[in-house]
Image 1 (cartoon, helix red, strand yellow):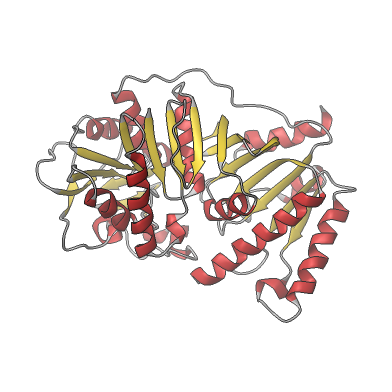
Image 2 (tube, one colour):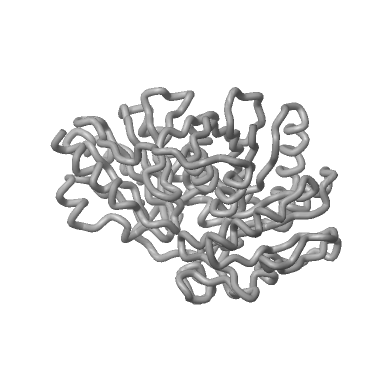
Length: 392
């Protein structure tokens, strides 16, 4: 069994999609380690939204729990553009591990994300010149990957090109501009090296271990008359669904009231009115989209509060409406929602597109959840599925 610890929920789902591509039986757990009859066990956390200290303690806790089960190798899934507390999490794993070397490869050339000469590029644009510069929780101010990872006096941090070897203690950031580079870096891994990084590197490691891609289903249609919920909780997702699609599919848009967004007086009363409006709209619409039509606020506390409001709303909504399909855009939002719903175990069924995964929920067999990272584009095939659901 392979074990992956991910720092956010959609990152975990992205790894699950890769597992499906390579013919693996995949199980996702939320924040816990349990013995499982599976090929790939993914532990989804929300450490990216925690403080650095809490993220460190969470990693130590999970690594200790892993000592109680048998597995072949461990991969630490991190954000591909260095958001979160990657250095703290890797240090936690090293502190209670015999391994003292880490190969961190966050490049994902298939998505145009490359590290060349110590600089991070997305589609040939420096990372800090992209939309990630405006991330509300982790605004990217540099494209220098060593600087993005941070500094820890106890651990040497080095760049590693494809023609260099890993010899001494430390964290090595692999440079990769092509899929071939990922494979070359994967070939350097030995038993005393902890592997970490983005999904592209995990795929290269799977191939190194002898796994091959299989033919998997990637298209489907939603059943007619099923209740459908789209939650756009990411700052990157506002334009993912065109107004033409929304109008044609009779999708009711319900944006968070500005009084709630700005935490004004009587927000509790407005929350109740908002909830009842959505419930009422499900009488004439099978599909509802929840969003935020306000400027992005660069404040972690505000982002956390808004996620919790969405989660509270959806818990109340699920008590009143039988929703069968839910798409959640954004890993932190997804984590907040499934935590409040007390969902803990998930069975990924299908990768609709890179990083976009549809899964069953053990605690609610009548519900399917589709997860999408906020920075990824909503796939055309999913929009087509929405269209088909109306006429099938």
